[in-house]
Length: 505
Image (cartoon, rainbow, N blue to C red):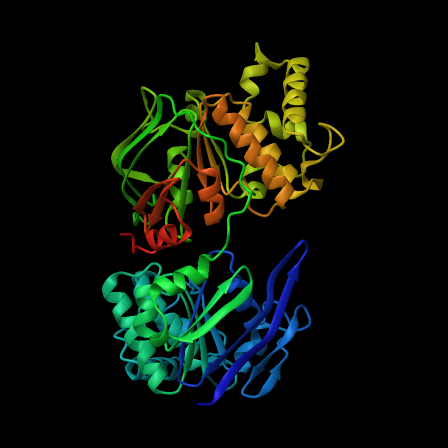
């Protein structure tokens, strides 16, 4: 079978991190080739190289398309070579019609300038009929469901005469019947000789449609096998096959009273009203770290943001902090009750990068050093300096600009800002993302000090070793529901990944 795309020893480096190292695989005409791997395995980086987002020359190794080395400088170059990427976040113009989106930037014209609307609708209808998609070309895209929009994206790619489709989590937001339609279309494309790279965490789909499976782990190729010659259990083992080592210094917990109760919590997006969390229940005790994991889109961040009063419309359920119901409260109110969030995106939501450390540390707790409407500067500086020293922030002093600090020291400032509110429950969303091993160990020691002082911590992490190493109990979310619950003794990487994929038990 003809090879239409091959990657040879691809290595991609960013400042301080190697995202891909000697990755190799090939794609055959009329093949559906699945790429599997944990969050952070390198799948997204690989897509960006193939699509021209990261141009030729910014990486080592080579790509060949139909036997010729690909040297894409732009996305347009990749499209000209017949490669189309369909991302999980769809790139459609909501106010335009189906036909306008399909031919966006390539509208058929007459007399040189005018759009030939009848021809556009005829050709759009022909494409829709060819791939058995029952949509009306003049229909505004905003009136379509998510699954229908996904199909428009695919037709849009095929209209460019693409011979290679790259689909990034294409079914993440689809209903079951829409998934079946999409998979049928991909099988039809396979019969027409169109090759697809299919990226998904849903192993039922992968084994239902893929001809071959390549597993990436920590930026390297672990294996490429025919789907018929491997199994879900083996793929999961290959995805997570690491040793924990001594990187996680979690000390034995001594759980105390129940600090946080979540009962039958269901939450919808406030704008779209789409359900995102369903029937979530758990308890959190003082002195305990509750780890929460799950794949991208599972609802981890949404859960923490909702508990903090910053996201979503509650459909049902109750949240209680000690004896206080946290219903319809603002983040300011919730902080006053003793719960605080350190956000996943510290640069966007956690810090004012253009201001100094002291300014950032004080943001959430100025009321505690304010008297008669005036900030007591001496008291503010003293308690900020104490926090600065306690967290061992590596900077010249409180006057240093946060934007000039390393990622690990920025994260310490985010934690310091949260801790100065004197919380009893601390929500940590990916607190060690993007920081080096030394800074991670310091963050872990801070978590230990918090629980030894009787505080309760929720730790959200995409890294399974971190969850196992630093949590006393672990909940894995799957599509907004609890997919599995584990004690630290019960948890293995294989069990956690299986639960995240809906295969627990």
